[in-house]
Amino acid sequence: MIYTGVLTKMQTEFKDPIQYYLVFKNDFIHVNQLLDKNIQMKFVGEECLNCHLNKEIYRQGFCKSCFFDTPNAGDWIMRPELSTAHLGKEDRDLKYEKKVQLQPHIVYLANSSNVKVGVTRKVQVPTRWIDQGAHEAIEIVEVPNRYLAGITEVALKDYVADKTNWRKMLKNDVEDENLKEWRERLKAYIPSEAKDYFIAHNEETHLKFPVHQYPEKPKSLNLKKEGSYSGKLVGVKGQYLIFEDNTVFNIRANEGLVVEIGI
Image (cartoon, rainbow, N blue to C red; front, side, top):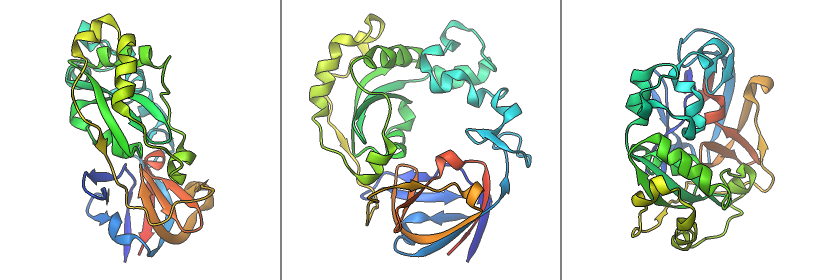
């Protein structure tokens, strides 16, 4: 069977293990059902996730013009501390920015390759942790807007990582950490504006991924460059497909590619 569609990040369900779905315009694939099966992927073209035109993808699934125009790619997306909707100041589209920025946000600790601090909207818990391949996570601050979450993250980055080592995460070269102890150690460094939002009593969330075999030396597939690929799927973690030959394919990093998937 052949499925054709535009890649967007896999949709997930928080179950044991995590359930993954590739969703296309008129169909979807339950990725967990493909484990231990050979699949083929072929690069067909590109389609911007914003204007939906057949244009070269620049970043984050957008063509170059849309990347610098759509509010979905404003600098505050990657750098929450730059959010200004709480001040009534527009970046690209104030109505959209108010909708996204002026809602509860979580500052969290997640352990994927190491303990890291991050920010997400409350409605994105635990989806954000799944996408990062974290096997454990905990909320440490819940604030009413994205700006407060952003300045909290910036303050804590001096004392804990804010990036994931994707190779280490995929190799499952990780150790369990006591995130509640980490939370208590970092409490002193939370900015004064956010101290009242500290979450003192909650438990770690543990996540289990559908992986039958972890890669020893993960090698990233550039499907656009290679044109096609065929291999046995042995796992899914974060937004990565993991194949038996150590090839890994980052769905999120390839959003906007039009592909054919043969099963």
